[in-house]
Image (cartoon, rainbow, N blue to C red; front, side, top):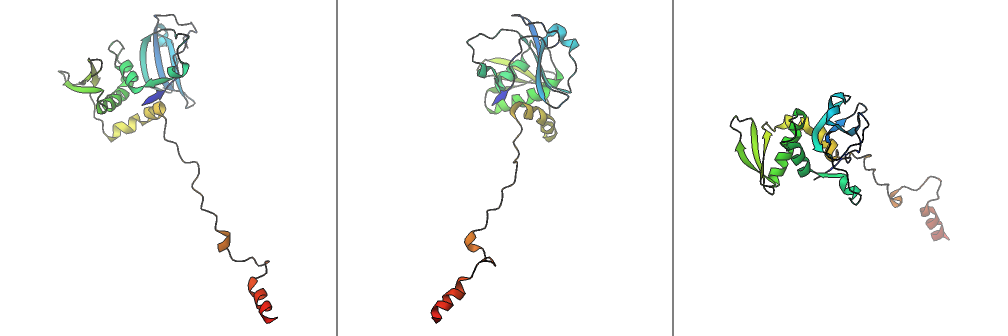
Length: 201
């Protein structure tokens, strides 16, 4: 599963300052007031000054690393579900309730793909524990009831990340009737009288 996201910006969307290597950068995936999806990257120190978007889909914090010139730009546009999970579930990221539904869904998906293995729950029962089988690292994900209501709630986030199913633009048109099956036009002479006339000659 690949998620099509814009690569990280090179400067803060609030202050306009260029990012420097090692800066803590807050990244948001949002729905703007016009309904379009966007990404906002800003210095962590400017987080309180970010104009509120219409809706926040998820939020994470990274240490900025400039992209090297030889890196493939197209590849930078691709973010796998596994990488997104590891970013959002990173214990160094401050907890954010907006991320919880997406984290729960990604954990479920990767458990089915055997990337994660359930390892029980925390002592207070509020979080499920998963082990990443390749990394041998444990992650604690808030527990929740993944029922029909949950999937309706998260549908908007999934449509943004992986693309909503395309609707048919037009219904299939009926095939044109075969010309041979059409009755002769009133303006066209019938072949039957001609044949009769020939027979009487």
